[in-house]
Each structure stands twice: as C-alpha cells, then as structure tokens.
Amino acid sequence: MISPQGPANNTVKGPNEPSRNAGGDGGLPPNLPDPVIEPRSRWIPSLVWMIPLIAALIGIALVVKSVSGRGPTITISFASAEGLETSKTKLKYKDVDVGMVKDITLSKDHSRVLVNVQLTKVAEDFAVKDTRFWVVRPRVAASGVTGLGTLLSGGYIGVDAGKSKEDETHFVGLETPPAVTGDQKGRQFTLRGESLGSIDIGSPIYYRRVQVGQVVGFSLDKDGTGVTMQVFVNAPYDRYIGTNSRWWHASGVDLRLDASGFKLNTQSLATVVLGGIAFQTPPNQEPGQQQAPDNMTFRLGSDEQDAMRDPDGQPIRVVMNFNQSLRGLSVGAPIDFRGILLGSVTGIGIEYDPKSRSFQMPVTMNIYPDRLGKRFRDSVPRQNTVAGQELLQNLVSNGLRGQLRTGNLLTGQLYVALDVFPKAPKATVNASADPLELPTVPNTLDELQLQVADIAKKLDKISFDDIGNNLNRALKNANSLFKQLDTQVAPEARNMLVAAQKTFGEAQNTLQQDSPLQTDVHQALQELTRTLQSLNALADYLERHPESLVRGKPGDKP
Image (cartoon, rainbow, N blue to C red; front, side, top):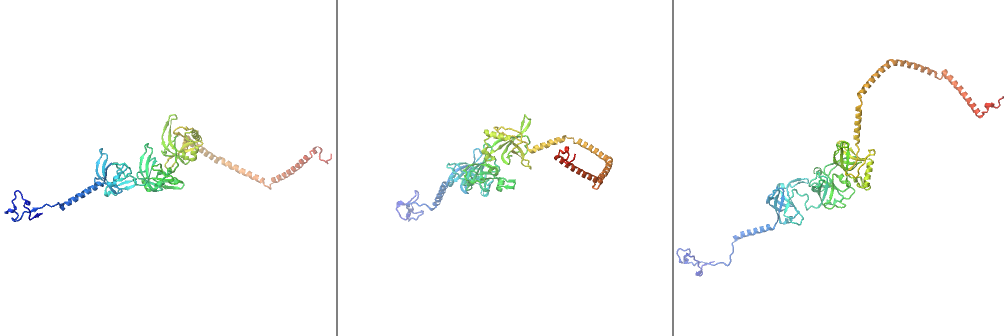
C-alpha cells in the first residue's frame, strides 16, 4: 500500500535514478513525497488460475474413474478378424457392453488373429477358464437365422460367462455361437447312432411333436463304427426323460402302406428339410418314471419302429452261400422269419470254389435271436454251450434254411427269409464256427424258371417240322378215304339200311299183340304153366310119401 508520507529510508531509488525531490524533469512534482510500498500479509491468487486447476482436477477424477472401472485385459484367438475393428468393436453379454477391442494382431505363425479386449470392472469375473467367446454376425444355421441386428450396427464379440474358479486371460474363440449357453436350465445327454443323417448343430429335439431342445454337438467314434451326439433338453421338459426313453431320427417322411391304407408320419416341416431327433417312452410305460442322470448315453434308432423295438441283445454273425443271382439284394436288407425282423444284411461277396469249379455268393448278416420273444430267450440255451449247439443242429436237421425272396415287385428288391422247409435236402452245420454258416434253398421262382427252361429245352428237341409233314400226309390220306366212302361205300350202305328197315318192319308186325304168333305163344305158355303146377304137386306128394314109388298110392288095386 502506498502512503503519501513515510520515513525517508523507505524511498526506493534506482542506482542511476535521480532523486524525485530534486525537481527538474522528473515524473513527480517536486513538492510531493516519495511513495511508500507496504507488502501484504498474505498472497491471494487470481481467479483466472482456478479454471485450469478445476480442469486438472476433473481430468484426474476421470483418469481415476477410468482406471478403477477397468477390468483385466484378455486375449482371444480367432481364425479371422472379419467384422472386428480396434476401439469400435464391443464385447457384449446379454446386449450389455462389458468390454472393448483394444488392438488386433497376428499370431507368430500367422495362422490366427489375436484380439486384445479390455474388460470392464463388472466383467472381471469373465476372465475364467471355461468362458466362451465368439463373433456375432449374420448366420444361417439349422436353428434359424441369427445376428441380423449386426447388419446395421456392425459385429461384436459375444460372451458366455464361465463358472470356473480358475483365472484365465488367453482364450480360443468359437467360430460359431454355442447352441446352449451356461445360464440355460436343462440337462445334457449323449446319443449313439450308426450315422449322422441330416442332423446338424442346432437341429431340434421333439417330444410328442413339441420342440423341447436341440443338438449341441456331434463327433465320429474313434473306431469309425458310429456317431456320438450331444443333445440338450430344456427345463422343465427334461423331467420326461427316463432311463427307459427311446430316441430316433425324426427327419424325413415316414410313408407306410398296410392293411389300414396309407399312413404318413412326420414331426414338422422343419424336420423334413433340416432333420431332427425325437424321444418318447415306450407304450404302456410311465414317462420319466426313473429320471435319467445327466450325460446318460442312449441308443439312437433309425426310425420310431426301430427305437421302440425291445433290446436286441448280442447279435449272431451268420453267413449264407447262395448259388443264384443276388441282383436286388443290398446291404441293410432285412432278415425275416415269418414276418419277424431278425436282423439285416451286413455284406455281400463272391467266392470261387476250386473243388466244384463254381462260384458262390456269400451273404453275411447279423441275426438277433432275442427278437423272437422272452419265452424263446428263457427256454433256449446259449449259443456257445453244448445244449445250444445241439438245438441249432436239430433245427437245421428239421429244415431250417435261408432263402432269397422278392420284397418288392416294382423295384425288384430282395430280402433273406429264414424259415423251416421240411422237404429240404439234408444238411449239417458247424455250430461252433464264427461266422455261423447256415444252409440255403433255392427260391421258388428260380426253381420255376429252371423248370420252364428245362421244358423249353425238351420242346426244342422235338421235330415239329416232321410232325407237321406226317400230319399233312395223314390228312391227305384221310381225305382220299372219305372220297372213296362217299362214292363207293355210301350207296351200298344206303341199300343195306333200306333192307334193314324192311326187316325191322316185318319183325314189328310179327310181335304185335293181335298177331297169330302172339296168340299161339300165349296158349303155349298157359299149357306150360299148368304142366309145371302138376309137376309141383307131384313133387310135394313124393316128398311126403316116397314109398308110393314102389307100392303105389294107398287105395289103388293091384
């Protein structure tokens, strides 16, 4: 603060500055005292400096908030970075942003794409071992069309939160979205079948034609004999799956013709095009009576009829050698025993027999004896036992044979019929052989064809030309004979007929009632009758009095 008066020692002068009290050309009037400067007790900053200070504090607060809101940084490996952009592509969980792509690089071998993602604080528990990541983009799959919303907003990375307690920062991303996420309620089961058919990931699972789940995965068996599938059934429908449930392929159309007419059976239009699987409890059994545990393995039948059949048990490998064409017989053809399906054909081959110098057509098949019913299973001994071998030998001795028959006249398809032919030639069987060789009999139609061919050969040996020539000569001779009869024999025969007619007329006149001959004959017969009566009386008398032949009648005079 400047005061008009003050002590002289408070006057401030520069080293070359003249005294302000000396007058002259100085800036102050000559009679004014020197100013006195008094320092303030404390320094107060200007308000201008408050603005950058506040900005700095806000920046620090934002940095602290950003750092405190960050989660861990994870690295996800994908096959391609299609649809991903640095600082733009987000990580979403149930459509909530839980992270952002920081940068995208290539792996050292250039085979994969490494995506570094910064997680938020709320998503830090996603960095565990069983968490799954995938890129959400428009896809067309068996379960339908997904990811259409990304056509406008762009793709993003989806996440399925894991439940593991083990931390992880490096993940391998899925190329397709998982069919079932970890928060879905339900149970998973395993199916084993002979082929995949038209099944794909996302194919529906049906129970009484209601979609209750889907296929979540499949793989080829290590031995290459079948396919293993993983299916997921949503809650609460999983309670209908029991240990007695049967599963089958529900894809395609099941068209049957029986005594009731045509029957069409299918699950839905989607299963016809995309395929599907159905399950149900066998008839007369309660659904889910004993619930199946998680990941229980079931057999997958080819159709509903195959699935509902009783358990087959262990098959018997059988081979049958046929001496006829196998055209129309294919692998998978049924083995039939009086209408009961016992098995199917597994292989068709050809072998040359050097002894007979002929070809044989071996057909291998699997036969399931348990399909003959519970009583048969209980009463028949096992195959490898002595009693089982004796039973098989007895059946073959009584006529058990295999025969090829036509199953469809339109397509010419064949099947193998196993039946008893009492008049079949005698045969034996080695019951301990593997595969078991059963004798065969020719097809009835083939036998008929052979017989017709044999008859045709015999007819071909007949000289029909000579027979025709001989018959022609015989007809000429007969024609000549008829001419002779007409010219020579006929007039003589006519005269003979006239004479015979005249004779018959005279005989008729003679035999009339009023003719003399008839009267004389009548009188002669009357006399003969009286004579016979007298002789009869005489015979009776002599029988009573035989002595009259010597003595005569009593009373007669000598």
